[in-house]
Length: 509
Image 1 (tube, rainbow, N blue to C red):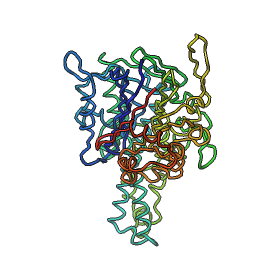
Image 2: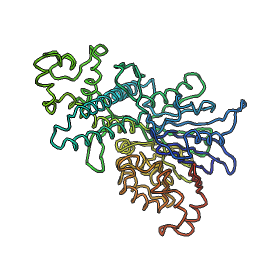
Image 3: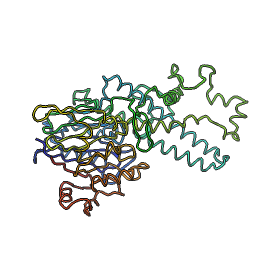
């Protein structure tokens, strides 16, 4: 029976990579990897993603052919800071590792019609955002070079604000990998050569799926409400929390009241119109698509290049002194809201799980980057388990929260990825420890200080960051928090190992 789990959080930068090693006393029973990624263009000196994977290899048993063998690979969702390590263009770091079982959420199931629709919408939107990103950048550079901002009141401030918007916008787009030149997306969308999109996260996930198609790995897709019992995990029960199966759940954002579930779908008219409008810039590719233009069927538009050749327009609308009146790119402003929505959409497709020791009920919570909509959906679920006497018992999420002794902070401890009354406040176990895969100054508002302060209270100071210099893991062992007894402090220290490459915490049954 498994009586301990060593959870190794790697310290390579802003991104998730967790190796779980399951033990029966001193004998390793099996290994599980949850994600392996890093934010685009991020790094920690001396701890590369390649060195992380090499470290993982040293901990895995060998096959008869001498290959490292990983029992379980869980990929929570398609963001670069969770899947970068699987990108074949990054050196194929996992090429010589045999992966026996791959676990994915139902949203990746090619046989699920709703999953197919959700993924198509996500791919279309990623493409539209990439194109909008290029258009914004091109327009800003052109206006700066032409002296456009010199003619505007507070033109320099306007330029700085637009530049800042593009930089922040680019950060969200890069969640799907480095922006690059490509001719077609995985879902078949073609676009003009001058536009750039980010599809590396899609390529990385598809590269993993090729193992399945080739029969090298088996795969399971999980629905919320399932209970996993596996012969390789004796004494362990796993609850599947998300992704939520409904796209229309109401959710309560702790900072701004109630909003709808964040799954993107065609019924969201404004966003769908924007996506179609951007994609229809390639008129030859999307001649049958509704571009979202309000008067498309009544008056044919003309391309900007052709319009500039019109004498009247050239002397009026395109007169440099009238540039401040131009509105050609104003409609792209909605892309900021769309980018944030896309981030939420993908995060809420996270495969979220809770790993329980059957005997003690102690639970390890790994929610991926699940945000508010997903968290709320867990409260509608019931997991039916078999008791020791063969009788059935219903488990609710509050039971899981109450027994949580290790919490992998969702979405790097952002403000809308850990519920308050319906989440953290329910985590009441005396042994609660939190692990936060995060690096300083990566995104504004992460980590969210009020949430961090409360997490510190709930975990009695046992909150460990991976790569944040403002919260160095090494300092956590320097002084016993007043909230911990001498016995609790000694137990915590004995279960914690801190190295430059990783932090490892052992959870015992």
